[in-house]
Length: 265
Ligand SMILES: [Cu+2]
Image (cartoon, rainbow, N blue to C red; front, top):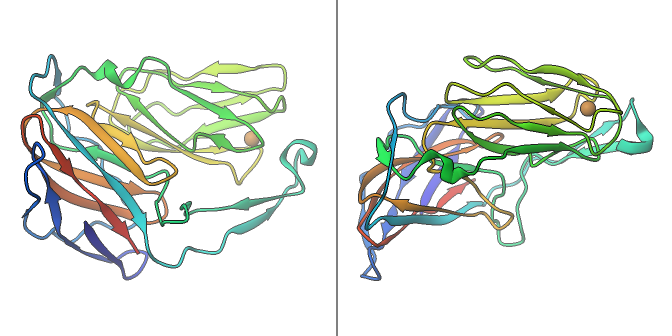
């Protein structure tokens, strides 16, 4: 478990206690404390360059639960000035989504320093974000380098998806009511890309471009799992759009399960 203190929007101090459990053996404390974490709005891409996918024998699993124990920011209510018949009269923007146990949804968990492992296409081959109810569903999409995203328009109204990347080609396309889907260009550089809509200002999503397949988004209960990880010691980053970034060091034993929980507060 990581204990994480959010002191301000730009300064964070983290401490770490990580439990790694190998192959059903005893839990054993590992890992030194973390270094100071980056600011809450910082994002860091997966390791730069050179990932090689192939067969993995005797791999292990990194799994855990991301939780939030602090006081969540009040949902923001935004008046709808376009398409209220589809979007509703107002939108409630919930920036920190948790379940009753504090499980934190929509956090990205990824290994940032892995050079070899399972093939990149184990992440899948089709990546979709839907515009539904004037929201992006899902709000976080993980895409391997070289793949594109299909943008659906279940709303059947005009949307204009507009990404603001640093390194990838931007996507800025009107999608009229009559256009049920469009395709982005392939994403070529690992990066966290903010996504918005020029028609509905509250719409918000993140496209996470990864060069390795060890990237996952926490579910509604905060859980995640990264499978077929070659034995070794890795840096695992947890990113949440509102809560910032934590980093932990995780050791995976052959055939084992390393538990990597993280807590934001
Ligand atoms: Cu829109």
